[in-house]
Image 1 (tube, rainbow, N blue to C red):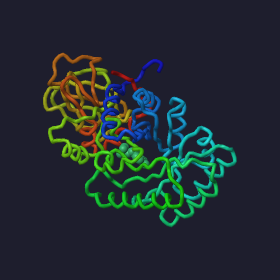
Image 2: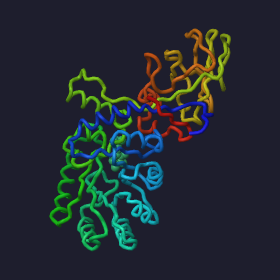
Image 3: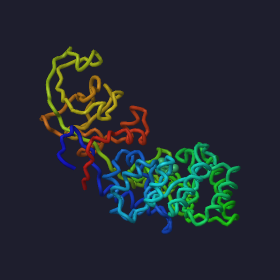
Image 4: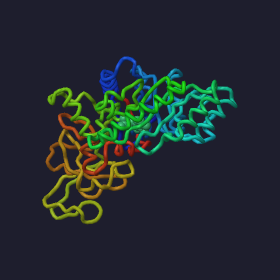
Length: 387
Ligand SMILES: *Cc1c(COP(=O)(O)O)cnc(C)c1O
């Protein structure tokens, strides 16, 4: 990785990855493929660092959103590891994907046509996943288009593998969507039947994301596309509670967070009562105070909305951030601590001694779900693999 001149570090725990994979596999049948979703720079964990951690634990299928992510994965994955693009791929990228053996979603006729024609032209089969609309109303073939899809598959026999028939649920992490999800499952089965009756059977049926894996076991089918659980986070509190209800309310959280974020104290100082601290007048010392300056600010993904609100861990204690979060710095109040010195560790997210600042607690203050906070962690901060 070269020299680490950065002001903070994102650590990835390889034992946490192994733990989460073991847990997720324990929920699935032997025949169900577990495809970790590594879009959004592996939910902020860094594609290049994370892919080998997955492969080391027996993962052989990966899912991304776009061709640029797929390209990055191709540079680091093992040859035998399968890769699937669930979203964007432009017309002139189709040839690349087919040549590389990258599996692709098709969700509209024009794309399907281009994929099939390209495969025919270059004499290599396209590995197709046909996405069907079942009620989310985002991407996927609509009912009235299915006959044309079947027609195209018939015309281009021999130029594709029908790898999968898939759909995505509209909010399986919330019980409020229960009926909508149940209808989607029913609709999916109907479309599957339509393909089957026409003589086209996909190798894999797949519909489930993390929340569906936990709350709708009937959706596991032949493959699951699991993002957030892989990184050790529940899709929502509701999903965790659903899990507890099934397994006993005293069950320990089976997941372990993979990522933690830390820096070190850059300088300490004391100020007198009455002094304003940092930019402007948002914080005034009511008594003499001891402060620590930490070289992390909003340019590093530490949001300014945590000004006068966030917490960090120093010496195993939770201490408040005071004043405005700057572009490159924040200031913590260490008046309550003894023997704090320059270069002491500061934990922004994660554990220190017996204390923890969770991504969720961090996100609650800023009103960001885990998903958003993780994917906003800057790519430039080095990811370091630890035990
Ligand atoms: C992001 C995504 C997933 C994974 O969602 P999680 O809630 O993180 O498990 C699965 N399928 C599709 C189509 C997605 O876009």
